[in-house]
Length: 252
Ligand code: 13P
Image 1 (cartoon, helix red, strand yellow):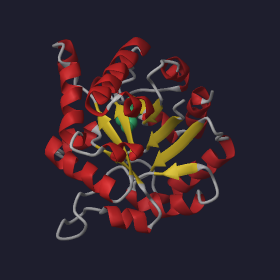
Image 2 (spheres, rainbow, N blue to C red):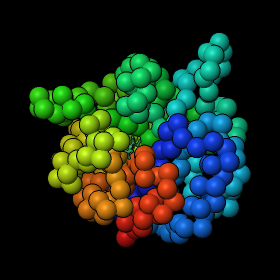
Image 3 (cartoon, rainbow, N blue to C red):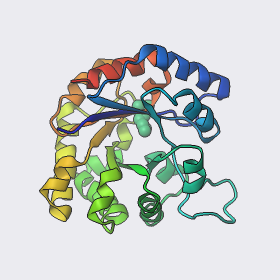
């Protein structure tokens, strides 16, 4: 049995007072239980406060990105050690918005994934095809390439701390979700790809989240697919009631 995960990626939303209000609302709304892990990923500047407010509450705090270097002349960047020093040991890597707007290549992501492993951080690693890839029928190939280029030189034990998030780019923020069948088909493919590389046992243990316009209305159907182990939620994670409803949908 894989414990489901519902993670909220807040992206570039919420000032500090707004973040505090949302976290307080989540604490009033959400009743985490043993069947689902809940994670939120606020902006960097709001992470210390999020950690403080959630110290005794079972919602984990994640960063949305980090640099691969330990320190140095990388103006505007944040290192793994900086995150760990404030109590954050989870990071989202390879989000399609980072790939598209900040030129994050497979090569850079390989270094970031390596750093997350070295630093014993949980790596929520995002993959997903563009609309054109899907219409041209190359979505499996694209996702396999993203996985293998960034993750497949990591040793087997690294996967204890890797969560894959399948986020088809055409479904992000568009209100258009992958159908449950499309999600299941890709999640199964990802699991098979992991099985071929690392063996069936490992593949059966890795959590694979779906992301892309998950809402309270469609969460249950998507989460009920056998290879979907929860979700990475954007827009709907900014509203406590909606996020709570999605967490509830993941409970078993
Ligand atoms: P939306 O849920 O807003 O489509 O965003 C998904 C996402 O990108 C989460 O990382």
